[in-house]
Length: 175
Image (cartoon, rainbow, N blue to C red):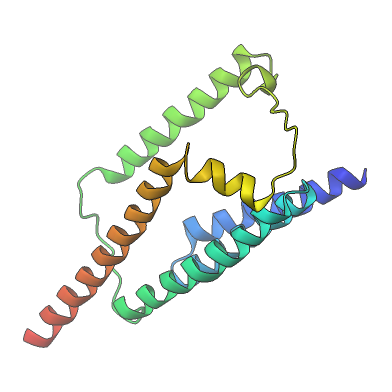
């Protein structure tokens, strides 16, 4: 019973934080919803005895990356007038269609496996605990390419946000 409570309490906070990220109108509120999601995920890591991953989650993602996101949001400016018209014709129908396809795929996977998720995700057996040396050895040998792709993605996203903010400020000063 305690294990279920230790899972469902942070899991519900993850879902609430994700909904805030999706549906909040203010970008700062979106970022705070993401912080709530990341902190709740760290709590789940702690309950799974993955304290190293939980601390990395808190320091790197909930700390450094979210600070960077907030700086970028502030640089873009949250006081500008929001765009209320669709920039792409039919984007609402496109997003709804993709959402329905994903939900249908999830329902198909669930029904075809008789709701037994271990058929798709077999349990992983670990013979040692996740020491920093073991994690670093695997991360920087077998997982170096995805690790570098993520860092490149963060750099490109930050540069694009700065370019958009600069372009917007340049257009506003010329008008």
